[in-house]
Image 1: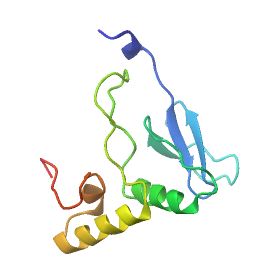
Image 2: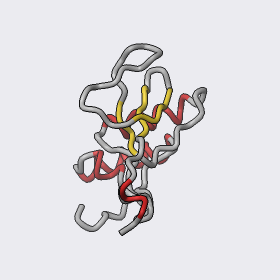
Image 3: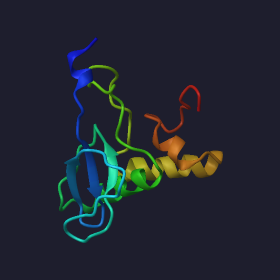
Image 4: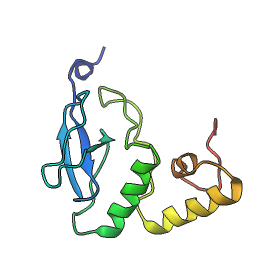
Length: 123
């Protein structure tokens, strides 16, 4: 058994409105943003926040989180799988929206694909 499996890691929590990211332990109640008071959204262990002034990158993050996806992929101990794909640019987001509309597939499924035109097994 991995030593790190017994450690609880903090997850990223995000306020898209303020473009802020915090690492906090998971609780049952919604944690408020210190800036605006709105509830923070859990972004997962593998979230890499874009710079605060990069509005375009934060718009992509807001769409990914609104679709119900999080930036996860590794095992609980951190030594397992690679992080799952999530789009980082608006061009990648536009391509995936077009494919989702054309195929009639939910946007969350298409956002999780590394290549928008290639279905992931099980999708």
